[in-house]
Amino acid sequence: MAAGNVEGSGREWVNWAGDQSCTPLEVARPASRDELAEVIGAAATAGRKVSVAGSGHSFTEAAMTEGTMVRVESLKGVLDADPGSGLVRVGAGTVLADLNEELAALGLAMENLGDIDRQTLAGAISTGTHGTGARLRNISAQVEGLELVLADASVRHLTAATHPELLRAARVGVGALGAIAAVTMRCVPAFTLSRVDTPRPRDEVFDSFQKLADANDHFELFTFPYADNVLVLERNRSQEPPRPRRRAAAYLNDVVLENWALGALSATGKAFPGWIPSLSRLAGRLASGSRTLDRSDRVFANDRRVRFTEMEYGIPREHGPVAARRVIEWVRENEYPVFFPIEMRVAAGDDASLSPSHDRDTAYIAVHQYRGMEWRPYFEAVEEIMDSYAGRPHWGKRHFQTAATLAPRYPAWAEFQRARDELDPGRVFTNDYVERVLGP
Ligand SMILES: Cc1cc2nc3c(=O)[nH]c(=O)nc-3n(C[C@H](O)[C@H](O)[C@H](O)COP(=O)(O)OP(=O)(O)OC[C@H]3O[C@@H](n4cnc5c(N)ncnc54)[C@H](O)[C@@H]3O)c2cc1C
Image 1 (cartoon, rainbow, N blue to C red):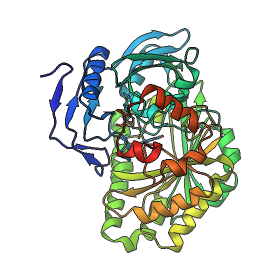
Image 2: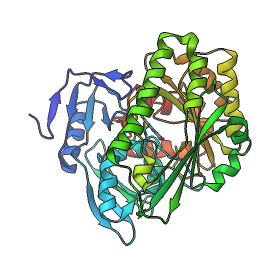
Image 3: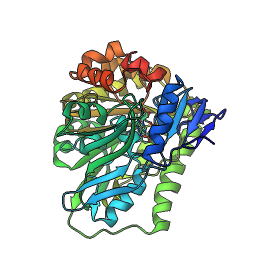
Image 4: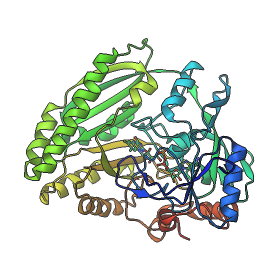
Protein backbone atom coordinates (compact mmCIF):
# COMPACT_ATOMS: atom_id res chain seq x y z
CA MET A 1 0.00 0.00 0.00
CA ALA A 2 1.39 3.42 -0.95
CA ALA A 3 1.70 6.26 1.54
CA GLY A 4 -1.67 7.80 2.37
CA ASN A 5 -3.56 4.56 1.91
CA VAL A 6 -4.06 4.66 -1.85
CA GLU A 7 -5.85 1.77 -3.52
CA GLY A 8 -6.26 0.99 -7.18
CA SER A 9 -10.00 1.29 -7.46
CA GLY A 10 -11.84 -0.54 -10.23
CA ARG A 11 -14.79 0.04 -7.94
CA GLU A 12 -17.74 2.20 -8.81
CA TRP A 13 -18.54 5.25 -6.70
CA VAL A 14 -22.24 6.14 -6.54
CA ASN A 15 -23.89 9.25 -5.11
CA TRP A 16 -26.64 9.26 -2.46
CA ALA A 17 -29.42 9.51 -5.03
CA GLY A 18 -28.00 6.45 -6.80
CA ASP A 19 -28.06 8.06 -10.24
CA GLN A 20 -24.52 9.44 -10.67
CA SER A 21 -21.54 7.12 -10.77
CA CYS A 22 -17.88 6.99 -11.76
CA THR A 23 -14.97 4.58 -11.50
CA PRO A 24 -11.89 6.39 -10.16
CA LEU A 25 -8.49 5.07 -11.17
CA GLU A 26 -7.50 5.13 -7.51
CA VAL A 27 -9.02 6.11 -4.18
CA ALA A 28 -6.85 7.70 -1.50
CA ARG A 29 -7.79 7.83 2.16
CA PRO A 30 -5.14 9.97 3.84
CA ALA A 31 -4.97 9.75 7.62
CA SER A 32 -3.51 13.22 8.17
CA ARG A 33 -2.99 16.56 6.43
CA ASP A 34 0.60 15.55 5.60
CA GLU A 35 -0.62 12.35 3.95
CA LEU A 36 -3.25 14.35 2.08
CA ALA A 37 -0.50 16.59 0.70
CA GLU A 38 1.59 13.55 -0.21
CA VAL A 39 -1.17 11.78 -2.18
CA ILE A 40 -2.17 14.95 -4.01
CA GLY A 41 1.43 15.77 -4.91
CA ALA A 42 1.96 12.23 -6.19
CA ALA A 43 -1.25 12.24 -8.26
CA ALA A 44 -0.45 15.64 -9.79
CA THR A 45 3.11 14.61 -10.62
CA ALA A 46 1.75 11.51 -12.35
CA GLY A 47 -0.56 13.74 -14.43
CA ARG A 48 -3.79 12.59 -12.80
CA LYS A 49 -6.79 14.80 -12.04
CA VAL A 50 -7.93 14.91 -8.42
CA SER A 51 -11.40 15.25 -6.89
CA VAL A 52 -12.21 15.18 -3.21
CA ALA A 53 -15.49 13.43 -2.44
CA GLY A 54 -17.46 14.16 0.70
CA SER A 55 -20.56 12.12 1.56
CA GLY A 56 -21.74 11.96 -2.06
CA HIS A 57 -24.88 13.97 -1.30
CA SER A 58 -24.63 16.12 -4.42
CA PHE A 59 -27.07 15.44 -7.23
CA THR A 60 -24.53 16.75 -9.76
CA GLU A 61 -21.28 15.11 -10.87
CA ALA A 62 -19.37 17.62 -8.69
CA ALA A 63 -17.32 15.06 -6.76
CA MET A 64 -16.76 12.56 -9.56
CA THR A 65 -13.50 11.62 -11.28
CA GLU A 66 -11.86 8.99 -13.44
CA GLY A 67 -8.53 10.01 -11.85
CA THR A 68 -7.66 10.14 -8.15
CA MET A 69 -10.58 10.34 -5.76
CA VAL A 70 -9.57 11.55 -2.31
CA ARG A 71 -11.71 10.69 0.70
CA VAL A 72 -10.96 12.81 3.77
CA GLU A 73 -13.19 10.99 6.25
CA SER A 74 -10.18 10.50 8.58
CA LEU A 75 -9.63 14.25 8.82
CA LYS A 76 -12.45 14.68 11.26
CA GLY A 77 -13.55 16.13 14.55
CA VAL A 78 -12.99 19.39 16.37
CA LEU A 79 -9.24 20.13 16.33
CA ASP A 80 -9.27 23.36 18.39
CA ALA A 81 -12.03 25.33 20.00
CA ASP A 82 -12.39 28.67 21.74
CA PRO A 83 -15.87 28.62 23.25
CA GLY A 84 -15.47 32.31 24.22
CA SER A 85 -15.19 33.57 20.64
CA GLY A 86 -17.07 30.63 19.09
CA LEU A 87 -14.15 29.92 16.75
CA VAL A 88 -13.75 26.20 16.13
CA ARG A 89 -11.22 24.49 13.86
CA VAL A 90 -12.69 21.33 12.37
CA GLY A 91 -11.38 18.48 10.17
CA ALA A 92 -12.76 18.89 6.63
CA GLY A 93 -14.25 15.39 6.48
CA THR A 94 -16.35 15.79 9.64
CA VAL A 95 -19.96 14.80 9.03
CA LEU A 96 -22.27 17.60 10.17
CA ALA A 97 -24.22 15.31 12.53
CA ASP A 98 -20.98 14.44 14.35
CA LEU A 99 -19.88 18.07 14.38
CA ASN A 100 -23.19 19.06 15.96
CA GLU A 101 -22.64 16.58 18.81
CA GLU A 102 -19.11 17.87 19.45
CA LEU A 103 -20.29 21.47 19.35
CA ALA A 104 -23.12 20.75 21.79
CA ALA A 105 -20.59 19.30 24.25
CA LEU A 106 -18.73 22.64 24.00
CA GLY A 107 -21.94 24.64 24.55
CA LEU A 108 -21.87 25.76 20.90
CA ALA A 109 -23.93 25.29 17.74
CA MET A 110 -23.98 26.15 14.04
CA GLU A 111 -25.97 29.33 13.46
CA ASN A 112 -28.04 27.72 10.70
CA LEU A 113 -28.18 24.34 8.97
CA GLY A 114 -29.84 22.73 5.97
CA ASP A 115 -32.41 20.01 5.74
CA ILE A 116 -30.13 17.08 6.61
CA ASP A 117 -26.90 16.57 8.55
CA ARG A 118 -25.22 13.77 6.58
CA GLN A 119 -22.87 15.98 4.48
CA THR A 120 -19.24 16.58 5.34
CA LEU A 121 -18.40 20.11 6.43
CA ALA A 122 -16.08 20.71 3.44
CA GLY A 123 -18.60 19.18 1.01
CA ALA A 124 -21.41 21.34 2.40
CA ILE A 125 -19.56 24.65 2.16
CA SER A 126 -18.03 23.85 -1.25
CA THR A 127 -21.43 23.86 -3.00
CA GLY A 128 -22.95 26.74 -1.01
CA THR A 129 -25.22 24.54 1.10
CA HIS A 130 -27.77 26.66 2.94
CA GLY A 131 -30.68 26.41 5.33
CA THR A 132 -33.41 29.00 5.54
CA GLY A 133 -33.67 32.37 7.29
CA ALA A 134 -34.14 35.90 5.94
CA ARG A 135 -31.40 37.25 8.20
CA LEU A 136 -29.05 34.27 7.90
CA ARG A 137 -26.46 33.47 5.26
CA ASN A 138 -25.39 30.09 3.96
CA ILE A 139 -23.08 27.77 5.92
CA SER A 140 -19.94 28.94 4.10
CA ALA A 141 -20.50 32.45 5.43
CA GLN A 142 -19.50 31.14 8.89
CA VAL A 143 -16.07 30.14 7.58
CA GLU A 144 -13.28 32.25 9.09
CA GLY A 145 -10.36 30.25 7.74
CA LEU A 146 -9.46 27.33 5.47
CA GLU A 147 -6.45 25.06 5.18
CA LEU A 148 -6.15 24.19 1.52
CA VAL A 149 -3.78 21.59 0.07
CA LEU A 150 -2.68 22.51 -3.45
CA ALA A 151 -1.50 20.36 -6.36
CA ASP A 152 2.18 20.98 -5.53
CA ALA A 153 1.52 19.50 -2.04
CA SER A 154 1.87 22.90 -0.35
CA VAL A 155 -0.65 24.02 2.26
CA ARG A 156 -2.24 27.48 2.11
CA HIS A 157 -3.80 28.96 5.25
CA LEU A 158 -6.49 31.34 4.06
CA THR A 159 -8.10 33.79 6.47
CA ALA A 160 -10.19 36.91 5.97
CA ALA A 161 -7.33 38.99 7.35
CA THR A 162 -4.50 37.49 5.28
CA HIS A 163 -6.20 36.51 2.00
CA PRO A 164 -9.69 38.05 1.79
CA GLU A 165 -10.11 37.52 -1.95
CA LEU A 166 -8.85 33.92 -1.93
CA LEU A 167 -11.01 33.06 1.05
CA ARG A 168 -14.13 34.50 -0.62
CA ALA A 169 -13.38 32.22 -3.58
CA ALA A 170 -12.47 29.11 -1.59
CA ARG A 171 -15.49 29.23 0.73
CA VAL A 172 -17.69 28.04 -2.15
CA GLY A 173 -14.99 26.44 -4.29
CA VAL A 174 -16.91 23.56 -5.97
CA GLY A 175 -13.84 21.40 -5.31
CA ALA A 176 -11.93 23.33 -7.98
CA LEU A 177 -9.27 25.14 -5.97
CA GLY A 178 -7.62 22.45 -3.85
CA ALA A 179 -8.36 19.94 -1.12
CA ILE A 180 -9.67 21.45 2.10
CA ALA A 181 -8.00 19.81 5.09
CA ALA A 182 -9.54 21.88 7.89
CA VAL A 183 -12.07 24.66 8.31
CA THR A 184 -12.29 27.32 11.03
CA MET A 185 -15.95 28.09 11.69
CA ARG A 186 -17.55 30.87 13.70
CA CYS A 187 -20.14 29.13 15.87
CA VAL A 188 -22.75 30.57 18.22
CA PRO A 189 -23.78 29.68 21.79
CA ALA A 190 -26.00 26.57 21.84
CA PHE A 191 -29.70 27.39 21.45
CA THR A 192 -33.12 25.81 21.48
CA LEU A 193 -35.45 25.96 18.51
CA SER A 194 -39.18 25.65 18.39
CA ARG A 195 -40.65 24.29 15.15
CA VAL A 196 -44.29 24.66 14.24
CA ASP A 197 -45.63 23.03 11.05
CA THR A 198 -49.00 24.21 9.78
CA PRO A 199 -50.93 23.35 6.61
CA ARG A 200 -52.39 26.52 5.11
CA PRO A 201 -54.02 27.69 1.85
CA ARG A 202 -51.34 28.27 -0.78
CA ASP A 203 -52.56 31.61 -2.13
CA GLU A 204 -52.77 33.07 1.36
CA VAL A 205 -49.20 31.97 2.19
CA PHE A 206 -47.74 33.06 -1.16
CA ASP A 207 -49.41 36.47 -0.82
CA SER A 208 -47.84 36.98 2.61
CA PHE A 209 -44.56 35.20 1.82
CA GLN A 210 -42.26 38.21 2.38
CA LYS A 211 -43.91 39.07 5.69
CA LEU A 212 -43.72 35.47 6.91
CA ALA A 213 -40.06 35.20 5.84
CA ASP A 214 -39.24 38.33 7.85
CA ALA A 215 -41.32 37.33 10.87
CA ASN A 216 -39.58 34.00 11.46
CA ASP A 217 -35.94 33.11 12.19
CA HIS A 218 -36.27 30.22 9.72
CA PHE A 219 -39.20 30.14 7.31
CA GLU A 220 -39.79 27.35 4.79
CA LEU A 221 -42.67 25.88 2.83
CA PHE A 222 -43.47 22.70 0.92
CA THR A 223 -46.28 22.41 -1.58
CA PHE A 224 -47.44 19.52 -3.75
CA PRO A 225 -47.95 20.90 -7.27
CA TYR A 226 -51.48 19.47 -7.66
CA ALA A 227 -52.66 20.42 -4.16
CA ASP A 228 -53.91 23.87 -3.13
CA ASN A 229 -52.28 24.09 0.25
CA VAL A 230 -48.76 24.37 1.58
CA LEU A 231 -47.07 23.02 4.66
CA VAL A 232 -45.47 26.00 6.42
CA LEU A 233 -42.46 25.30 8.65
CA GLU A 234 -41.68 28.06 11.15
CA ARG A 235 -38.61 27.62 13.32
CA ASN A 236 -37.76 30.20 15.96
CA ARG A 237 -35.33 30.52 18.84
CA SER A 238 -36.91 29.76 22.19
CA GLN A 239 -35.86 30.44 25.78
CA GLU A 240 -37.80 27.37 26.95
CA PRO A 241 -35.84 24.23 27.86
CA PRO A 242 -35.72 21.57 25.10
CA ARG A 243 -38.36 18.84 25.20
CA PRO A 244 -36.73 16.09 23.11
CA ARG A 245 -39.20 13.60 21.64
CA ARG A 246 -38.95 10.03 22.88
CA ARG A 247 -37.04 7.86 20.39
CA ALA A 248 -40.10 5.74 19.62
CA ALA A 249 -42.29 8.79 18.97
CA ALA A 250 -39.63 10.37 16.77
CA TYR A 251 -39.23 7.13 14.81
CA LEU A 252 -42.98 6.81 14.35
CA ASN A 253 -43.33 10.37 13.04
CA ASP A 254 -40.14 10.81 11.01
CA VAL A 255 -39.58 7.35 9.62
CA VAL A 256 -42.89 5.53 9.62
CA LEU A 257 -45.24 8.41 8.86
CA GLU A 258 -43.13 10.89 6.88
CA ASN A 259 -40.73 8.63 4.97
CA TRP A 260 -42.95 5.59 4.64
CA ALA A 261 -45.97 7.56 3.49
CA LEU A 262 -43.88 9.61 1.07
CA GLY A 263 -42.20 6.45 -0.24
CA ALA A 264 -45.47 4.55 -0.63
CA LEU A 265 -47.26 7.42 -2.39
CA SER A 266 -44.23 8.08 -4.63
CA ALA A 267 -43.98 4.42 -5.63
CA THR A 268 -47.71 4.35 -6.37
CA GLY A 269 -47.33 7.48 -8.51
CA LYS A 270 -44.43 5.91 -10.39
CA ALA A 271 -46.48 2.79 -11.14
CA PHE A 272 -49.62 4.79 -12.04
CA PRO A 273 -48.53 8.26 -13.23
CA GLY A 274 -52.14 9.14 -14.10
CA TRP A 275 -52.99 8.98 -10.39
CA ILE A 276 -50.37 11.58 -9.42
CA PRO A 277 -52.71 14.61 -9.30
CA SER A 278 -55.08 12.73 -6.93
CA LEU A 279 -52.20 11.38 -4.84
CA SER A 280 -50.76 14.87 -4.65
CA ARG A 281 -54.07 16.32 -3.41
CA LEU A 282 -54.36 13.45 -0.93
CA ALA A 283 -50.84 14.11 0.37
CA GLY A 284 -51.70 17.80 0.68
CA ARG A 285 -54.72 16.90 2.81
CA LEU A 286 -52.67 14.45 4.93
CA ALA A 287 -50.06 17.12 5.74
CA SER A 288 -50.70 17.81 9.38
CA GLY A 289 -49.57 20.31 11.97
CA SER A 290 -46.95 19.46 14.56
CA ARG A 291 -44.73 21.11 17.17
CA THR A 292 -41.18 20.38 18.27
CA LEU A 293 -38.95 22.07 20.84
CA ASP A 294 -35.39 20.79 20.95
CA ARG A 295 -31.68 21.48 20.59
CA SER A 296 -31.24 23.50 17.39
CA ASP A 297 -29.45 20.91 15.25
CA ARG A 298 -32.09 18.26 16.03
CA VAL A 299 -34.80 20.64 14.87
CA PHE A 300 -32.97 21.58 11.66
CA ALA A 301 -32.14 18.06 10.47
CA ASN A 302 -34.59 15.59 8.93
CA ASP A 303 -34.24 11.93 8.15
CA ARG A 304 -34.55 11.57 4.36
CA ARG A 305 -34.89 7.90 3.36
CA VAL A 306 -36.83 8.16 0.13
CA ARG A 307 -34.37 8.67 -2.76
CA PHE A 308 -34.95 11.41 -5.31
CA THR A 309 -33.11 13.83 -7.56
CA GLU A 310 -33.31 17.59 -7.24
CA MET A 311 -32.80 20.99 -8.86
CA GLU A 312 -32.63 24.18 -6.79
CA TYR A 313 -32.35 27.79 -7.89
CA GLY A 314 -31.58 30.96 -5.97
CA ILE A 315 -33.39 34.02 -7.35
CA PRO A 316 -33.87 37.55 -5.99
CA ARG A 317 -36.12 37.10 -2.99
CA GLU A 318 -38.90 39.37 -4.21
CA HIS A 319 -39.60 37.02 -7.15
CA GLY A 320 -39.97 33.85 -5.05
CA PRO A 321 -43.77 33.48 -4.96
CA VAL A 322 -44.39 34.45 -8.59
CA ALA A 323 -41.66 32.06 -9.80
CA ALA A 324 -43.04 29.22 -7.66
CA ARG A 325 -46.55 29.91 -9.03
CA ARG A 326 -45.18 29.66 -12.57
CA VAL A 327 -43.61 26.26 -11.78
CA ILE A 328 -46.93 24.99 -10.42
CA GLU A 329 -48.80 26.31 -13.47
CA TRP A 330 -46.34 24.58 -15.82
CA VAL A 331 -46.79 21.24 -14.01
CA ARG A 332 -50.58 21.51 -14.13
CA GLU A 333 -50.82 22.76 -17.72
CA ASN A 334 -48.54 19.96 -18.92
CA GLU A 335 -50.08 17.39 -16.54
CA TYR A 336 -46.51 16.49 -15.68
CA PRO A 337 -46.22 13.38 -13.50
CA VAL A 338 -44.43 14.73 -10.45
CA PHE A 339 -45.55 13.79 -7.01
CA PHE A 340 -42.71 15.30 -4.96
CA PRO A 341 -43.33 18.72 -3.40
CA ILE A 342 -41.80 22.07 -4.34
CA GLU A 343 -39.82 23.67 -1.53
CA MET A 344 -39.19 27.37 -0.96
CA ARG A 345 -36.69 28.88 1.48
CA VAL A 346 -34.89 32.20 1.94
CA ALA A 347 -31.35 33.34 2.74
CA ALA A 348 -29.55 36.63 3.24
CA GLY A 349 -27.00 37.77 0.69
CA ASP A 350 -23.32 36.99 1.32
CA ASP A 351 -19.96 37.73 -0.26
CA ALA A 352 -18.50 34.33 -1.32
CA SER A 353 -17.58 34.80 -5.01
CA LEU A 354 -19.66 31.85 -6.21
CA SER A 355 -22.38 31.80 -3.58
CA PRO A 356 -25.78 31.56 -5.29
CA SER A 357 -26.79 34.25 -2.77
CA HIS A 358 -23.85 36.47 -3.69
CA ASP A 359 -24.81 40.05 -2.92
CA ARG A 360 -28.55 39.46 -2.97
CA ASP A 361 -31.24 38.32 -0.58
CA THR A 362 -32.46 35.10 -2.07
CA ALA A 363 -35.51 32.90 -2.41
CA TYR A 364 -34.47 29.29 -3.03
CA ILE A 365 -36.93 27.18 -5.01
CA ALA A 366 -36.27 23.44 -5.14
CA VAL A 367 -38.01 20.85 -7.29
CA HIS A 368 -37.62 17.11 -6.88
CA GLN A 369 -38.41 13.96 -8.78
CA TYR A 370 -38.73 10.45 -7.34
CA ARG A 371 -35.83 8.14 -8.15
CA GLY A 372 -36.22 6.35 -11.48
CA MET A 373 -38.84 8.78 -12.87
CA GLU A 374 -38.27 11.15 -15.79
CA TRP A 375 -36.97 14.49 -14.45
CA ARG A 376 -35.37 16.18 -17.48
CA PRO A 377 -38.42 17.91 -19.14
CA TYR A 378 -39.59 19.17 -15.72
CA PHE A 379 -36.18 20.47 -14.69
CA GLU A 380 -35.62 22.08 -18.12
CA ALA A 381 -38.92 23.93 -17.80
CA VAL A 382 -38.09 25.04 -14.26
CA GLU A 383 -34.66 26.23 -15.38
CA GLU A 384 -36.23 28.33 -18.13
CA ILE A 385 -38.46 29.99 -15.54
CA MET A 386 -35.51 30.60 -13.21
CA ASP A 387 -33.40 31.97 -16.09
CA SER A 388 -35.94 34.78 -16.45
CA TYR A 389 -34.99 35.90 -12.90
CA ALA A 390 -31.21 35.55 -13.46
CA GLY A 391 -31.39 32.41 -11.32
CA ARG A 392 -28.25 30.86 -9.93
CA PRO A 393 -28.28 27.07 -9.52
CA HIS A 394 -27.18 25.24 -6.38
CA TRP A 395 -23.76 23.80 -7.30
CA GLY A 396 -24.67 20.41 -5.85
CA LYS A 397 -28.06 20.07 -7.54
CA ARG A 398 -29.01 19.33 -11.14
CA HIS A 399 -28.95 22.10 -13.72
CA PHE A 400 -27.97 22.58 -17.36
CA GLN A 401 -25.90 25.77 -17.15
CA THR A 402 -22.37 26.27 -18.48
CA ALA A 403 -19.57 28.68 -17.63
CA ALA A 404 -20.80 30.92 -20.47
CA THR A 405 -24.33 31.20 -19.09
CA LEU A 406 -23.23 31.44 -15.46
CA ALA A 407 -20.47 34.06 -15.70
CA PRO A 408 -22.83 37.03 -16.30
CA ARG A 409 -24.89 36.03 -13.23
CA TYR A 410 -21.94 36.26 -10.84
CA PRO A 411 -20.54 39.76 -10.24
CA ALA A 412 -17.42 38.19 -8.65
CA TRP A 413 -16.85 35.59 -11.40
CA ALA A 414 -13.50 37.16 -12.36
CA GLU A 415 -12.43 37.19 -8.70
CA PHE A 416 -13.05 33.43 -8.56
CA GLN A 417 -11.17 32.77 -11.80
CA ARG A 418 -8.19 34.80 -10.53
CA ALA A 419 -8.14 32.64 -7.41
CA ARG A 420 -8.35 29.51 -9.55
CA ASP A 421 -5.40 30.66 -11.68
CA GLU A 422 -3.36 31.32 -8.55
CA LEU A 423 -4.30 28.22 -6.54
CA ASP A 424 -4.67 25.59 -9.29
CA PRO A 425 -2.88 26.92 -12.39
CA GLY A 426 -2.37 23.38 -13.77
CA ARG A 427 -6.10 22.53 -13.38
CA VAL A 428 -5.45 19.39 -11.37
CA PHE A 429 -8.68 19.83 -9.37
CA THR A 430 -11.08 19.48 -12.24
CA ASN A 431 -13.55 17.05 -13.76
CA ASP A 432 -16.25 17.15 -16.44
CA TYR A 433 -18.63 19.07 -14.17
CA VAL A 434 -16.06 21.67 -13.12
CA GLU A 435 -15.07 22.18 -16.76
CA ARG A 436 -18.68 22.63 -17.78
CA VAL A 437 -19.62 25.13 -15.07
CA LEU A 438 -16.32 26.95 -14.47
CA GLY A 439 -14.58 26.51 -17.81
CA PRO A 440 -11.20 24.97 -18.66
C1 LIG B 1 -31.27 14.40 1.03
C2 LIG B 1 -30.49 15.65 0.72
C3 LIG B 1 -30.82 16.83 1.36
C4 LIG B 1 -30.10 18.00 1.08
N1 LIG B 1 -30.47 19.16 1.72
C5 LIG B 1 -29.83 20.32 1.41
C6 LIG B 1 -30.21 21.55 2.04
O1 LIG B 1 -31.07 21.60 2.92
N2 LIG B 1 -29.59 22.68 1.63
C7 LIG B 1 -28.64 22.69 0.66
O2 LIG B 1 -28.14 23.76 0.31
N3 LIG B 1 -28.23 21.53 0.08
C8 LIG B 1 -28.79 20.36 0.44
N4 LIG B 1 -28.38 19.19 -0.15
C9 LIG B 1 -27.21 19.24 -1.06
C10 LIG B 1 -25.91 18.97 -0.28
O3 LIG B 1 -25.85 19.74 0.90
C11 LIG B 1 -24.70 19.36 -1.13
O4 LIG B 1 -24.74 18.72 -2.37
C12 LIG B 1 -23.37 19.08 -0.42
O5 LIG B 1 -22.34 19.62 -1.21
C13 LIG B 1 -23.11 17.60 -0.17
O6 LIG B 1 -22.00 17.44 0.68
P1 LIG B 1 -21.10 16.12 0.60
O7 LIG B 1 -20.25 16.07 1.82
O8 LIG B 1 -21.94 14.96 0.31
O9 LIG B 1 -20.13 16.50 -0.63
P2 LIG B 1 -20.05 15.82 -2.09
O10 LIG B 1 -21.39 15.86 -2.70
O11 LIG B 1 -19.35 14.53 -2.00
O12 LIG B 1 -19.11 16.90 -2.80
C14 LIG B 1 -19.62 18.19 -3.09
C15 LIG B 1 -18.50 19.10 -3.60
O13 LIG B 1 -17.60 19.39 -2.54
C16 LIG B 1 -16.27 19.11 -2.94
N5 LIG B 1 -15.53 18.68 -1.74
C17 LIG B 1 -15.91 17.78 -0.82
N6 LIG B 1 -14.97 17.69 0.14
C18 LIG B 1 -13.97 18.53 -0.20
C19 LIG B 1 -12.73 18.88 0.39
N7 LIG B 1 -12.31 18.33 1.53
N8 LIG B 1 -11.96 19.79 -0.25
C20 LIG B 1 -12.36 20.36 -1.41
N9 LIG B 1 -13.53 20.08 -2.00
C21 LIG B 1 -14.33 19.18 -1.41
C22 LIG B 1 -16.42 18.01 -3.97
O14 LIG B 1 -15.27 17.90 -4.79
C23 LIG B 1 -17.64 18.49 -4.71
O15 LIG B 1 -17.31 19.52 -5.61
C24 LIG B 1 -29.04 17.99 0.14
C25 LIG B 1 -28.69 16.79 -0.49
C26 LIG B 1 -29.40 15.63 -0.20
C27 LIG B 1 -29.03 14.34 -0.88
